[in-house]
Amino acid sequence: PTQTSPTAGTRPAPSDRPHPAPLATAVTSISLEHTAILGETIELIAREKAGILKPGAPVVLGPLAPEADRAITEIAERIGAGPIYRVQRDGVWEPGVIRVQRDGGVIDLQGPGTDDRFHGRLGLSGRHQADNAGVALGLAHCLAQNHLLLDPRVAVDKGLRLAFWSGRYERIELNASQVMVILDCAVPLLDMVRYHLFGSGKTWISEYGSAD
Image (cartoon, rainbow, N blue to C red; front, side, top):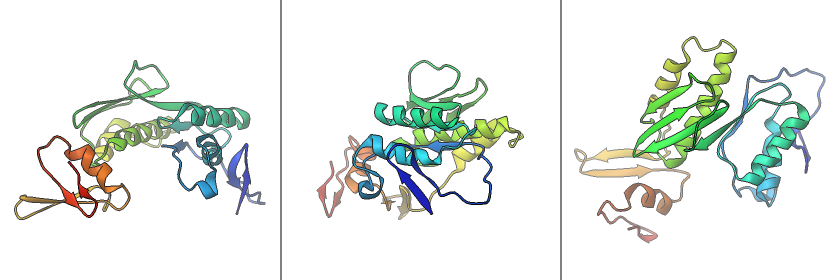
């Protein structure tokens, strides 16, 4: 069961059983979805998602709209959650920031600590996966701080390169690679095609019409 508050987010209902703080919490992204349940603005949705924050637990945030970041930061300060590590696209790296840079299909991640690094291609496709990888790097940092990863850089490198999610921009090659089928159960078809195939000189036809 949950209790909902317009200012403090959705949080577990009280019980007689104590719940230890998690090693870390994370919010990858916030958009206007499930508004009937979460709220009709980015700020309200952020406050609901902030229900995952717990006192004493670090927080890793993907790139968020300013109003979402402010709402989550306010709640984190109120309940004593933190520190907060933020994913930042490009810019200058500084301790506590997880910088994400893209160069074609190659991703470079740095932070939140000096030794937290990744450079290479991700196993998962899609522009948003670079941001998600930054969040994963932040969570790995928290695990390493608790001595739960013997070799954090090896674990991060292997995990980000080999991660696979069936049905999420899954590319299936047919007829000796002459035909490629893209299977995705969540991303709008035209968004997916425009991002990955625009400018390739190919015309892709779907039930929605031409995508080039």
